[in-house]
Length: 333
Image (cartoon, rainbow, N blue to C red; front, side, top):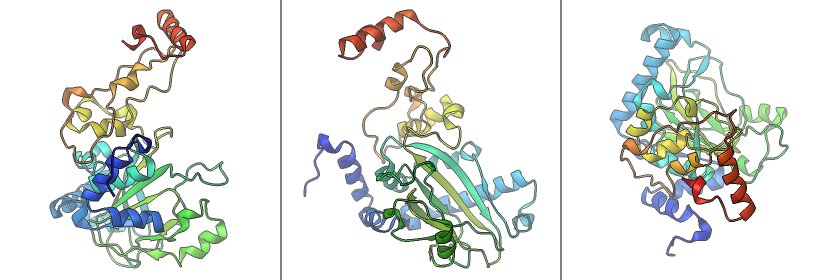
């Protein structure tokens, strides 16, 4: 069938064509059928990138724990930790959150206007430490999940994963149940979930409906991973990218990065809403293959005084809302 740019389907045709070009349709089917998929290393990046990422995570772990490389295994003996907010620790992370294959599948789940919620490194040592069976659904006050996922993520494996290596585990098909596991269900699936068997350099992709956890690590050494999570833009992010992104970071990356940073979201408003901020950002579908630095086109918007009411702008807003035809040209400027 010919995939056309049907307006009724919004960005889906453009995204679908690029997923097909990236040879991801089987991965897309696995996401839909089982709730997760594994990208092989060759669909993620080069061997050199995998090695660089591993070295970067080891460096950050040593810096934060104030220890040598040789001491890390003892530092994380029978323990694991998410090393949070690493995006600005190395330029490599900016590249990773834009990985076309991962981002394409994630956008399929949470929309082409999704934003980055967190970027962490995960270090796990030999021992009994494990992650209990859970779903990443963060709307805890909702008894059931929405049909659509609100969040999705990648786990970039920097060491081999298996049950013995303390790797991820999944409950295939659980994304269709659209609810969080009960305490009893978490206990049952802890030792009955499907372990991920994948080599270093792979990426595991899933949405926030899928039940997952991990097994204890019984092998020597460390389990290393980089995690990127993305949300629909109406959600509060787990880490403060909007507040810490710089003009330099936006300029050196493609336009899609600015959208991930969510800097052009006009909300939250003050006494005088500045709707023009949203208009400054990139619009339309942004290709997964676009690697051109945005340069001076992307800058962190200057926001006004939230406490000041601007009478002239207020009149323009009033006129636009009263006319029911949008805002007048005076305000659009």
